[in-house]
Image (cartoon, rainbow, N blue to C red; front, side):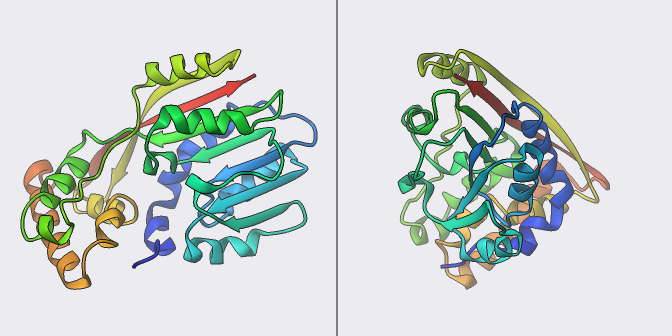
Length: 255
């Protein structure tokens, strides 16, 4: 089964990091914080989080060996990385901050998920989460529609990607029910000016399409990618440059 490809993911490193810094700006720094970064990836941004907060301890969590191999270079006293499935992970002590940048959209049942994350926190803990909300863009719609066609549908065993991300207002009411006294929830559009419409394919190859790549044979995934490229070009044209509008939910909450 293919692992994440750090090089492919970081082809758009600057664009992908913009929401991280916007999310980081929402956090209230406090002395000697213990932090958990869910979906730490290559660890570079986890290190930025750790340094910005002057945290006492930060643990980056990811399930990708390839990503964690890169993250190891950022490890130091007080900053460590752990391989774990977020769905089964529990921090060893209540963190003062649960941080997650662009990963929780891979997990389902967000009402239960956020209740679990909230339950980890220390009494004055903070929650900061960023998730893509671009599932209605052609880049996503075409991918899922194509997966429902043959021969891909049979090879996928009928698998269909479920999009678990809620509307921003649903997160606001959910955070209130979970006992957060203060919160900030927003939907933000990031406009990424890419060299061409074809560059969108390279973007989603590093994220969205990995969901299908790991379920298809290399030969069939190559055919899927060929058809996806043609179908996406038919849907969005061949503009050069191409303005890729990408929606994301950013939320912060504190006890």
